[in-house]
Length: 251
Image (cartoon, rainbow, N blue to C red; front, top):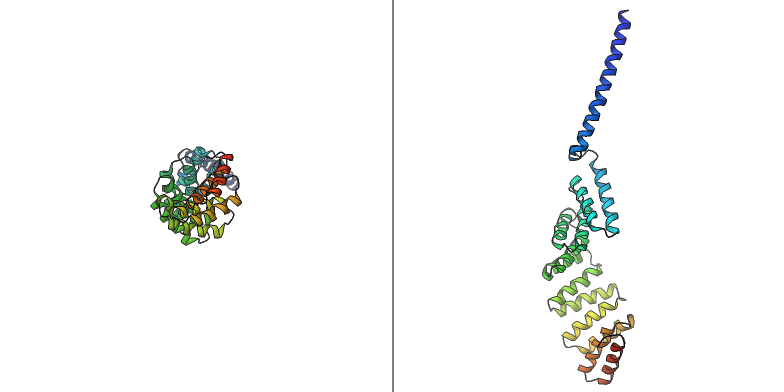
C-alpha cells in the first residue's frame, strides 16, 4: 500500500512540475516577445535578422525605399554586424537623396568588409551627389585598387576629375573605361569634350565620330563635333553637323 501511494504521489509531482514548466515557458515567451530581450541575447536573432533583411531587399527591388529602410533598421538592430544590411540601407538612402546617411552606412559596411570595392564605389557616388569630387575620387581610386576591372569606377572618377577641370585625368580614366567597355557612346562624348578643352579638336572629332557611330541619334554630339570642325576652319563639315543637330532638336 505504501508503494502504491508513493507512485501516485510521484506522478502528481511530475504533473505539477510539467505544468509549472509550461506556464513558466509561456510567461517567458510572452515577456520576451514584448521586450525583445531574447533577441538581445542572440537567441533566434540571426533568423529574424535574415527575415528582416530579405523583406527590406524585396522593398528595395520594388523601389519602396522607406519601408526598405525600416526593415534594414530591424536587421541591424538584431545583428549589428550585418554588413549587407548597411550596404542596402545605404543604397536606399542614396535613392531618396539622403546622401549623408548613405555615407554613414557605407562607412559601417566598409568597416566590416574593407576589401569589397563596391562599398568604396557607392560611397564615392554619394560624395559626388554632395558635390565633393575630391572625396569621391579618393573612394573611386580605392575601388579601382581593389578591383582594377571596375569599369564604372573609372567612368565616375573621370566625371569627378571633369568637375575639377582636370581633363588630362578625365582622358586617362576614359581610356581605361573604353578598354573595358568599348560600346558606350557616352564615354567617347565625354572624352571628346576633354580633348576639345585641351585644344585638341582633331582628337575630339575622332571621339565624337565614334560616339555618333554608336549612337547616331545624339544631337548634342553632332553639334559639338560641328564646333570642333568650325574651329579647324572646316565650315562645310561644321554646317552639315549643325544641320543634323537641328534635325534632332539641338540648335
